[in-house]
Structures are given as structure tokens and as C-alpha cells.
Length: 128
Image (cartoon, rainbow, N blue to C red; front, top):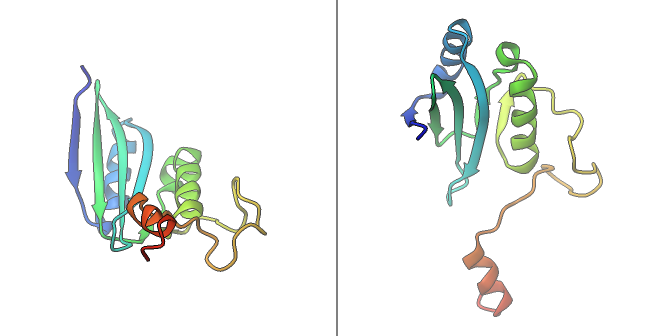
């Protein structure tokens, strides 16, 4: 069974952690994110360490530094995808073009706003 270890870090530790991992030859597996109910981001940088995954998680930030200069396309695509889907920005990441959403689909921030299921049910039943 693969071991999974979660480590909470601050936004200031994102780049030094990525640099340390890259220098050690550790592969970036993925960057995952979601928005808490208060709209704050939770972003996890998942690295393949040995036979396990170490997840370095930043909680409560919507603006983070990009690690694209360190992990190239391995970071660029998930950072851009997260930015396109959520109100989370990676400073230094080029978001001038969308990955998969047409520019005309959403006005304003250009993000898909995820609505919790309980809110959708209330709206469907007129309980706003």
C-alpha cells in the first residue's frame, strides 16, 4: 500500500519546498485545490517520495507563488487549470489564454464558481 503523508506549509514555503524536492530528484505528481465554504483556497502539492506521496498543503490562501519555473509543464498545467476553475491565482503563471473554457463563456473573473450541493437543492425548492 502506498503511504500518504500530509504536511501543512505556508505560502512562503511553497517555492523553497519545490526547489528542495526538485534538487533531490523528486517528481511533482499533481497539484490539487478546492475552495472552503468561506471562499479561501486549499492547495496541495503532491510529490512522489520513494513509494509514497508527500502532500504539502497550503490552507486559506487564494494567491500563491507559481512553481512553474521549477517544475515547468508539470506545474504549469495544474496551476492554470486551478486558476481557470477557481478563484486561486499563482503569481508568475501566464493565464492570458484559457486551457479549455472559451473566453466568451463566463464574464467577470473568468472562473467557474462551484456551488455546494445543499445550496443547489435549496434553490431548486425555492428555499433561497
